[in-house]
Image (tube, rainbow, N blue to C red; front, side, top):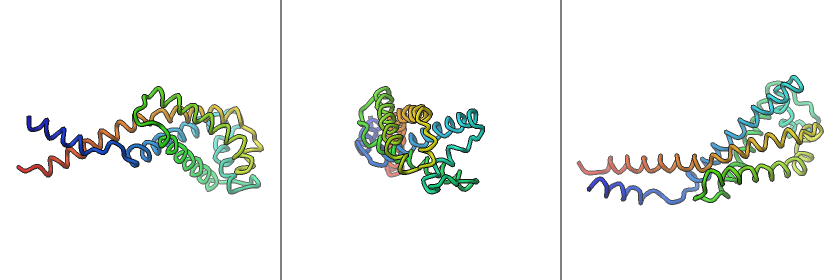
Length: 182
């Protein structure tokens, strides 16, 4: 009986909402999964179609290389860094907007809608001004596929939240055990 009471007291100490546990970390995890899926698909598609799998990263680096002269490993790494940073930020924004008590199906559908909205904004507003080399390539159809993959990855936010909540509960239980008198 005493153990059950301690568990209830520990569960009460776990915060119902935490910015780090419910927004930042799930957004970062979903963003990295989505960015990895996008990068993998983009490299595979351009590798098959153009024979240069590193071309998407070079075009993304066009944010800093405005004339399209991005070459070498440094430009590829810069493009990947930009891609993963933007994906992490966008996924964190999605995690902030996603209701806490949602199901995985709702998160998947909202993630797909969110990614379609991002695709529209990216292809029509941001790319022409942000990365002229990528805009000149006009990869709208490929970007649609990539953004749908990103939206599917956003559907993992509720699962990551559940895992992090369980880890937080376990952490509080271990702290309570350590503080319990012997």
